[in-house]
Each structure stands twice: as C-alpha cells, then as structure tokens.
Image (cartoon, rainbow, N blue to C red; front, side):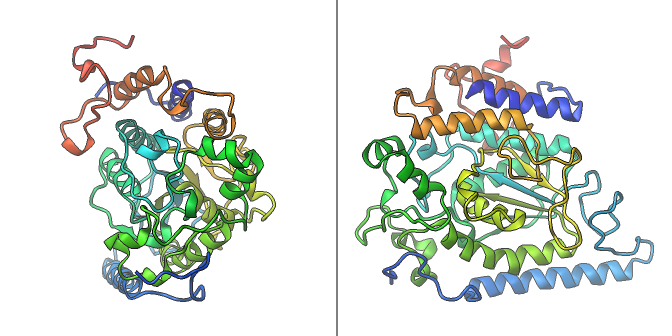
Length: 398
C-alpha cells in the first residue's frame, strides 16, 4: 500500500516535472425507482438554480465586449469559452473519495455514512495536490450526500485554493446500495459465498446482492437526509440500478455544465463512478465486471463536441484497467499496483493481514505528510502519525 501510493505521487511529479517540497415508505424490490425521467422537488430547485447561474453568466459575458467570443470548442488547444480552467486541456475529472473507516475495516459500506480516517484525509489532500500541480481549475463540483465524499471534496478544494466554487450534493451520486451485505466484512463474505459470487455482487452489470431487511440497523430510511426520497430508497442495487439513477443526474446537471464549457469535478464512490464511466466510455455489460477504481487518484478526461472521450496523447487505453481513455494523474503503473492490492484485500483469503492497516502504514503516513506539508487550517490538519507532528522537527526525510 505504501509503495503504491508513493509511486502514484512520484509518477505524477515526474509527469509534471514538479518536485515535492515541504510546505420511511420502502419499496420491496431492488431498483425501486420510477422512470428514469422522474425528478424530485430538490432536484428541480437545484436545476433551476443552475440555469439562473448560467443565464447570469451569459448576461455578464455579453456585456463585456473585451472578452473573447464564447465557444463550445472543447477540443481546441486554447480554451475560448469562459472557464476558470485555462491551463490544461482537460474538461472533466473523476475522483473517488479517500479511505473511510469501513474501507479500513474491509466492510461493505453502501449508503452508510462512514467518515474519513486520518489516512483518508491524507489521501484526499494528496489528490488535491496532484490537481493543483496539474494546472486544472474547476468551475463546479458534484458529489454525493455522504460525508466521506463531502469531506474529500472540501479537502481537495482547500489544497487547490478553490473553496469558492459551487459544490452540488445529491443522493443520485451516492454509492450503490449493497443490500444485506452492508456492514459485513468482505473477506468473511468471500469465505461464506465464494470469490466468484462476491465478485458478481460487487462488479457485475445486473446481479444485485441480497436485499436489505426493513429492520436492518444501517437502513437509509433511518437517516433524516433521505426524508424527501423515502419512496426511492432501494433495498439493494446492481450496477444497472445505480446507472439508472446516476444517469438522470448526469443528463440534467452535468451535461448542461459541460456544454457551457465549464470544467467539472465529480467526487464520488467506486460503483457510482463506475456507472458514469461505463456510460461515458461505452464499456460493455460483459466487460464492466473487470473495471475497478482506486481511491483518491484523479482521472482526467478531454471531451469532444459530443462529450465523448478523446484519445490519450499516446493513443492507447490506460494500462491500469485496460478500458479508459482518461488519464490517471498518478500514473498507470501506480494505479495498477493499488488495484492489485485492493483485490488481495477482498478476495485472497490466504492473506490474513488487513492490508489497509499493514505494517507499512506509518511509513506511508510520514511520506504523505511530508509531501503535502503542514497546514494551519484545522479542517485540513492530518493527525495521523503515531509520533504526532513529526515533521516540525524533521530536517530531511528518513
């Protein structure tokens, strides 16, 4: 784990030629939604608010005769439309949240609102540093209602100095609902049901896990944030179900922003992001079972006029997953190493050690804290090292 994360940051530094310096009605079935066009009152309000913002932006642009003519030519070398992002060719970026408490404990999470660990705070901050050093600037962020994503968003924007941009939160960007698996240890479930079955539950297109009981201790209906959408809470979800709801949000909120020339960051969960990337890349239903995403490594895309991914500069698909035309800012090799470790953590029952809290974690923390430096902002303070604020007295890295 430590080696993979360090390689991820090191490869990014090499690519950017920058050196680190210190510094309760519940439907009975899965996919229990109305049609894909259904929309809630909060969604309509947010959509209306975004339209008003866009109209105000157009009014400002038209009144400023000194500005260049607005254009949607997203593929041009020089971005002629109005966006904060003028330094890079990317228009869209996906980012999975940092480590949460149940990631650390190897438990199925779903809609359960688990917070970031101290290591997760570091992961989010390093992701923010990668984005900051890449030259990207975002016009808006879209994320879920779950705090592991919300806090990751806050930490990333703080590292980038972009706390001022709009952040939109919505339940349609929540993680997939893992049904009755929620709260259970993944490796114990593999021992009980077998590797192939668990992989189908976690990664296949249309095979949901067992449904959640109505009296489950982690049922989302117990959470007041879902009081307006109780009739839409599923008992479990396949990736097909997850895409059904995330696609509604994509088409109503993200597509209009991209068409306006805005640069968009989506901070999400592995399976929700898998559903959006599957839709964007046109990955087949049979192949999607093999797509996995690492935590806290930005995946940046260039899009054509039809919002389809442009090829990477090398003309190849990424080497980490073999499916993507987006670019991992941490480098393909480092991402591949992280994904290999994640697979062992879940499926390899011969590995007794919890790889999320293995013996190399303290070394990893020290390197990460050194990489992002000290901060005076309480929200960003990473108190993860067992030896405290060690870097205050450090003249060099060990």
